[in-house]
Length: 131
Image 1 (cartoon, helix red, strand yellow):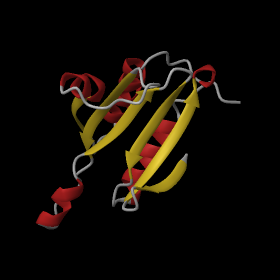
Image 2: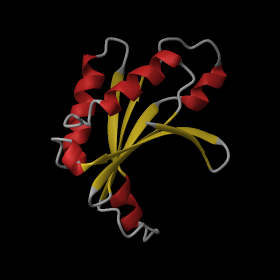
Image 3: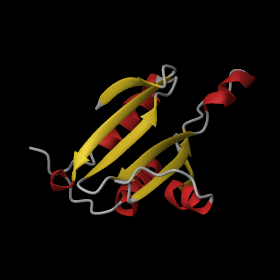
Image 4: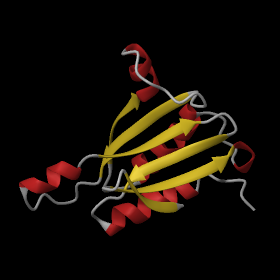
């Protein structure tokens, strides 16, 4: 998993999984695996899936030529609400993109280490054929 700063302001985690490194065959398959992790976690609630590719096509937006599917799974750890400012960083999402020969998995770094660790482990587990 690679940690970087997107657009000079957003701390993100990115993982590239070549299709031969996983038994998952589609974005929907990966989202189902992530939803199972979310549903199994006692402090996390599933919210929704968002089809970013369909939305972008519907508004005639710009799409990278290699992207064949792009969706987000949206959920919340929300174990405390200490002030109104934390609402700016909630809920969480993980983006899954099919780039033809690989999947690109990405999320913005949460402010809670426990959430970061869980999301990172969920994503790494998707490379279930890695040697």
